[in-house]
Amino acid sequence: MRRFTPLCAGRPGALRLRERLASLDAGRSVVVVGGGLTGLEAATEIAEARPDLHVALATHGALGDGFSPKGRAHLRTVLGRLGITVHEHAAVTGVEAGRVVTAGGAIPAEVTVWTAGFAVRPIARASALEVTGTGRIVVDATMRSLSHPDVYAIGDAALAMGPGDKPLRMSCASGIPTAWQAADAITARLTGGKLPNAPLRYFNQCVSLGRKEGLIQYVTADDRAVPAVLTGRLAAVYKELICKGAAWSVANPTFALPGRRRRVTREPAAAGSAVRTPARSTPSAR
Ligand SMILES: Cc1cc2nc3c(=O)[nH]c(=O)nc-3n(C[C@H](O)[C@H](O)[C@H](O)COP(=O)(O)OP(=O)(O)OC[C@H]3O[C@@H](n4cnc5c(N)ncnc54)[C@H](O)[C@@H]3O)c2cc1C
Image (cartoon, rainbow, N blue to C red; front, side, top):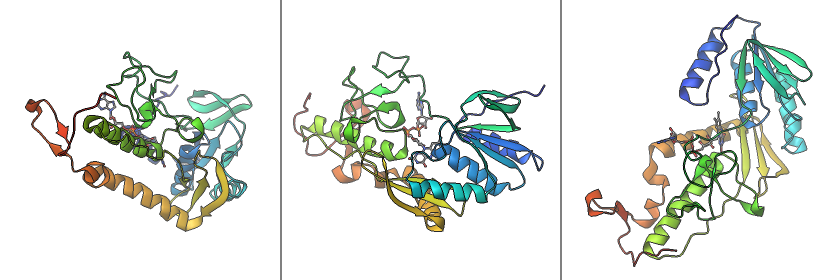
């Protein structure tokens, strides 16, 4: 029996997946589990790059059920054009060598790509911080831990509430504004300034569907689809620009971080304080 090796999200996992796909002969099957944004991107990317493989997508609900009717119709068209077999309402109960098991039967799978949900690292759960059942740190509107006010959490690690008191989903779209919010709140508390109230909201969900197609689904502030969508090559370029922009801002943090707006100065660590603003007043313990 062949060895079953799970792959994790991240560069090493991506490189191993690339290797595995490259080793597959024509006609072999790849199953992407999960019909969320990552699953849609993975399935279309693989099908476009390797039209000689059988690519299938298994999803718990209906295909694209979070999108508007126009968005769903576009998804069906593109996935159909790429020859992707869609298994809807197919809850996967097991992954075995050579197949994926669902309540309705088995789907052949030489390679399985699991995209059914993000998870956070266990470090916060192992600490005394108050976390949710999934290990995300519970924070207030300034990203400060409810249980430990000296600790701030941002991005996937934090469970922050957005508009309508709905938890923000794990995404760059949430991670960036929560980082700004935390940085501004820390600065405000250190300098006695006004606490920030940056809007933590959504504008769109951007999905690439291979290199030449995409779907930009416009959403309400609390992330519900509205009728408007952008599709086609323009949507693919839009998503690519977002990815390139994200990579660029990671490589050039001084252009993206609040330090640019607040003229932060640095002191030697030995002086007891790593960072301060030039015109700070008495630190506030709020
Ligand atoms: C395949 C895929 C596609 C995605 N596509 C999109 C998309 O199109 N749009 C979107 O908005 N979101 C997307 N996301 C989600 C997005 O990537 C994450 O929500 C985002 O990266 C979260 O940012 P973060 O900084 O909170 O965590 P991460 O990006 O995971 O960064 C955490 C960092 O902390 C480091 N770290 C962890 N533990 C420690 C430790 N103990 N000590 C020191 N360092 C540590 C890690 O090495 C890592 O560098 C995607 C995610 C995946 C996996």
